[in-house]
Length: 440
Image (cartoon, rainbow, N blue to C red; front, side):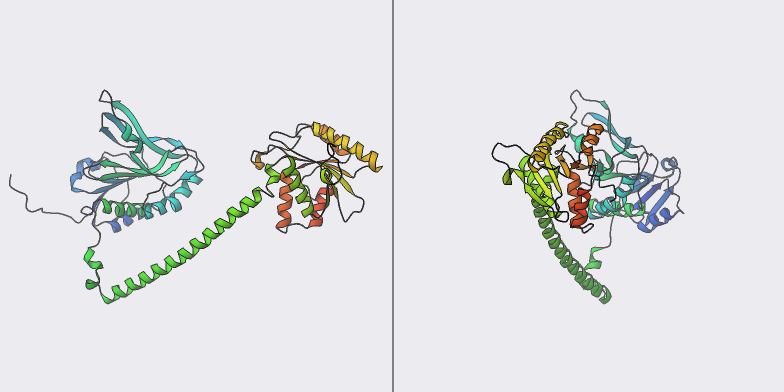
């Protein structure tokens, strides 16, 4: 056979096969605008008899499974399986493997800007809102070697979007190393599929510029530009430089804010957040700081009244707007739940106060930071299992106060949602428990 010197009937590249999409649909019209040569097959079975796949460069497959030759670059929306492989003594398939019900997903590094933008801004929000998005992965179904090497399977699929367990919702893999061909796979409900086709074509062009040619490079050289193109290119460059300046300024502001936020977090850890994390003297100190911020006069009994070894309540609280009003305060912190015995301890403190002052305190506050190592949002009500004892405690002026409610009240004051007088009233008028849900 003589040397092949001329190809007759060659069509402009890239040449795209489309399976499962109506040619007159909106998506079909979009695809026709993206490539110069295209052929549609609504029925997947028609493609095998109607075309020689070797004459084509890529395929877009919609919600079906079809056997395609390994030289083709493929973008598949939905469907169950793609193809079978036999490599390094391992027989395997890339196929759908159930569904994910995750609430959080990750976008891996290394994606092109276009693909990352599509995943982050369009695909991920839809996946998050859905319940049960399909996932796909590798299914090994046979070995043809005594000691097959399966290490290559670990990175075989290059994911676009994964859940917390590493399950792939969208991604790609290499079909044929010698051809450089890839198979991309995304869910059938992926928004704006035409944008994915455009992004895939751009990526494939970087892999094989012969099969996926773009505009001729010389069009973009200054010597062959028209005056209008040159002017627009200059304006475009100026705008890009302006964008870079704006982004740099925004990045600098974000970095400064992040540094300030880190400093604020560090201050909170040694300050207000001790209401939620501390025990012992640091917790007593922060409760004292909080009550003073509300405008109470606070006496630290250990430092101002008690003698060494003399065990009394932690704090005494007075309201400057109510002369003579006083509350005895015991502050406790626990890694586990509040302790019922603390109410008995407070009873002894009250007895001693009555003996020394010849009057009853107006209130007795049991302030407790329980389950201090856990998320405050998940913590139960202190002494929730002891309603009778809490009710009895309340009959004598006792109030159980969760430090997380003190924190909430303190932040409401700082946000301007209530005054110091109102904050004091919430605490002063509480009965049995401080309940921020109850209007005053």
